[in-house]
Image 1 (tube, rainbow over the protein chains, first blue to last red):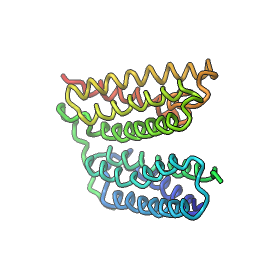
Image 2 (tube, chains in turn purple, red):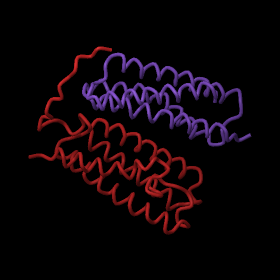
Image 3 (cartoon, one colour):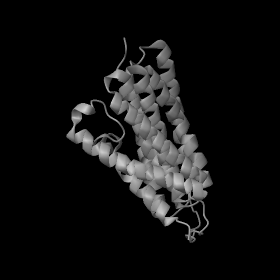
Image 4 (cartoon, chains in turn red, blue):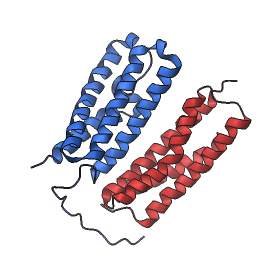
Length: 121
Length: 142
């Protein structure tokens, strides 16, 4: 796992989460910019996942590598699913969907880092 | 970013269970359905004998979350009933397992979603059934 990239992803996700929660509190539906921002975060996450997958082939495999791969698949699919659901819900709750997703992604990235640190040798 | 302010329309009575806040719940229940069942699958497949009770409970919790997700997504009388049943089981589960995991730590050497009232998951498993049940009540057919 790439440290700086992970941290950048987490920071961006948390900043976006605050923004989406403010939007929810103001009773605003997700606008185009909100949806694109989530897709941008998704792209950042996708880069992180690609780096991790390359790491699986060149570096040490994590001890629990099946779990690791499961988390990778979930993580990469997360932002697109959130955008899909948010587009179905053009109300304040659509903004909350994006907010929940932006709060969950840092957890997934942290879990991935934890799993990557324990290598099977 | 100059969206026109949108007036909050009253929620129509026949609005689907899985829309509005229901769609947020759908996402959160989906996350828990996935994480609890995936966790249980890995635990049971790799080291079942270490803590069979905890792992079976993980699997059970996963199924309950799956049922709640499906109920919310289905909607209608049947979906409501499924969601209501699974949210109730979920509430009992998190309270009973949460209490047992603190009282009898030996029986729970490995964590489940419901151990310690879901502290490993930011206590979301404890709060979620209350929101779910409130939402179902809020949307009861009149």
